[in-house]
Image (cartoon, rainbow, N blue to C red):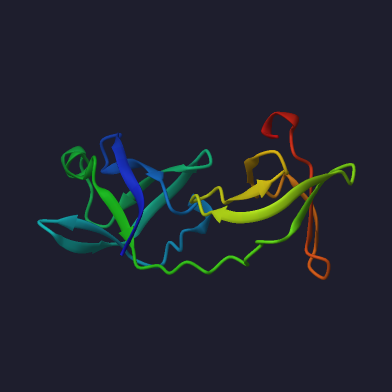
Length: 157
């Protein structure tokens, strides 16, 4: 079981709660699969009755059997677990990172699998910097030559 979210607070009086995601993004949740909440050390399965995404890392949800403020308050502070396996990311170690103007930034030396925000360590020759692998920053991927072309904001380097 992997912790994927935490119940942050109750929401309204119909048993809904606000949850903050840790290991996944709200859009990556399979709402047809159960999630689990531990009670007395035993993972209890729940299904989503309602799911409304709020921002990039939160959602307002109602789980099966939760229909009152009292039910929701019992969940506050608890971890939401899922029986998930992560796909291994492709190892980019050794790839060259080029900035938008074909300027060589450095070589990728490792990865930091931050949930929802994977990053790579890039050795610039003078220092090692952590660069997010955001779709907004990646311009092109050349697998044959192991080159990652990115538009890295000045402040990150």
